[in-house]
View 1 (tube, rainbow, N blue to C red):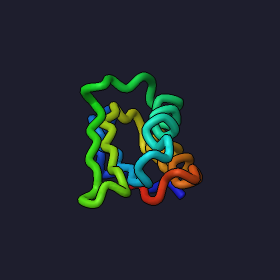
View 2: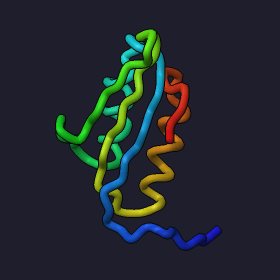
View 3: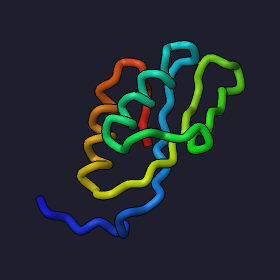
Length: 87
């Protein structure tokens, strides 16, 4: 399947990850993202707890170089047991 991406690479791309608070979510997901996109600066990560504090949403802004790179990141994130959802 050789689909054209509507994105022009390289591009700054936000990756959102949700999981349970305290489940080592940040540690696990940052390692996955850095494996594919290189080091992520602290300023490129946003964290937002849910209203009741049980869940946390993390947003990583990475420099995406290809659709294949993004696909690989999402595949590994969704396979991670700590991740409930990746957007």
